[in-house]
Length: 249
Ligand SMILES: [Zn+2]
Image 1 (tube, helix red, strand yellow):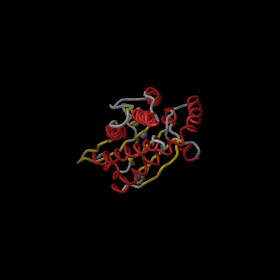
Image 2 (spheres, helix red, strand yellow):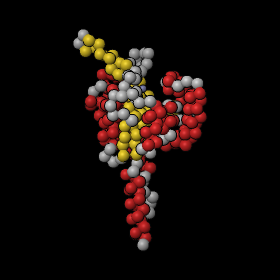
Image 3 (cartoon, rainbow, N blue to C red):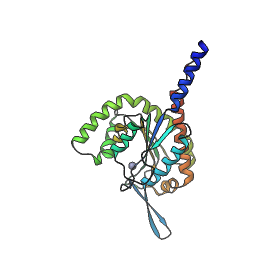
């Protein structure tokens, strides 16, 4: 009898891991190019959009994680998706985690490095990041509503978000930062409304700086994108393996 109940528990645990649902969110899209980088190709200056690099990397992560998880993209094409639509999709697919992919930009051509943000509001730097980046399309009442929503959601999800961020970033640090000589800017708390609205444990990855020519040249290669995506996927796999480790019987 004990053996049967043990087997049932194991089957249930296995099923729960199959049902895990991941939403990958390539930032921007369609009319929204995101940050822009410039590269000379011969005599022509080529403009490269953040949305395209984000989509390429997101697709590779999606492909790899689809082997073991129910994995979705907020967009698989170059199209406009609002922050609200991205969050609604998280509800629709009952996502367990939300991963947003972005490319950083700075007015200084010298800013460089990769960094991982997780949803948390217990830090002044996190709040400043909201004011700079994510509020730019939101006004008045909407901002206040979102701030209240963010507070409630963050308290519930912050520990999981932090854990996932650390696991993913450890892989990025080992497999991307060192290999490609890209500075490791670390794991940081931040409030991005797209993460708060998704109401899930969330991370937002800034792959590198599109405004830095050296980093841009690396980020547009398939090799870099694959290594980056594989590191993210490995971190996510570790996150779930820790979540669902069967209890000692
Ligand atoms: Zn972005």
